[in-house]
Image 1: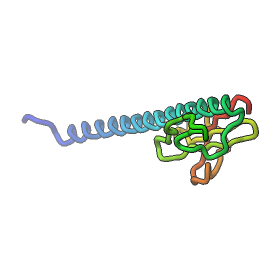
Image 2: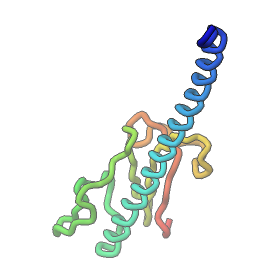
Image 3: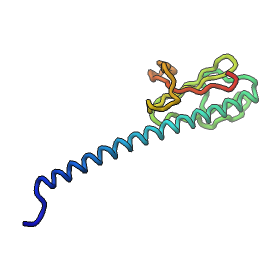
Image 4: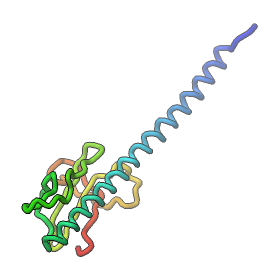
Length: 137
């Protein structure tokens, strides 16, 4: 008799199912981490624009930041502000002589997440659990 038995086929299908489940979860985690890396990069880009603004005006702009980020004299600091890759929002707060930029990271194992998270980040209903602050904050 040639061919495979039903048991052999079921075992192979089970093994393939397990391997695909592992692969899909690893792929999802990689996508999640990639979005978080993009968020951190976006906030660094916004921070550089804010530092350029403060060099020209000796103070940080009031919130919210306009998009495009241009001052009244027409100087362009960011032609288009980055937007969150996962549908969340970035949140800017002018704080005394500095600023705080907030974002929501999806990878709960990221060591840069702060607790407790800031609820209602920017009135968006999202929870912000990552922030960067100005160097003079």
